[in-house]
Image (tube, rainbow, N blue to C red; front, side, top):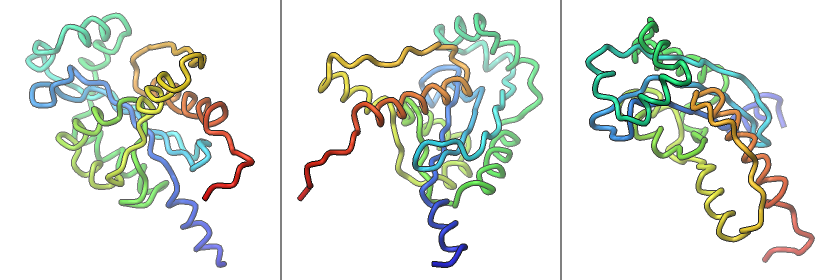
Length: 193
């Protein structure tokens, strides 16, 4: 096996971890205001830590924010960063895609995170180049958590800091999936058929 093939084989298994903060959950009325990215290998080891970008939003957009993000972003300091940010949506998207071109193959790596389908809806609408770069499949840690809660009700889930900042949320999502992998998805000695 050639080295190039081996490298390509590994890069095809990489996972694009993304978390976004939004002004609300209605993709038709709200927008993105923060995005962070980490690329891991299939074993959940960090390959590269990507951009963590706060996207500027004008006053008229912020005035239409839903109550929960408004309160949260005032408390965690994100609101001030949104107001003072110099990044446009397009600049943020371009920086993320350029980063991913260095660490993943177009159309091969799934996007992962907690409730990642919601982030994906906003990415599809506001960052179509990023949406196109990623594989159409998603790895949703929240889905796994929901199954574990139902099938293993005594399982102790890891505590989260809940800062509601994109980079912190990604790190917690990766740690959470590692925990499920080590505790729930254990190899069996029983052969499968």
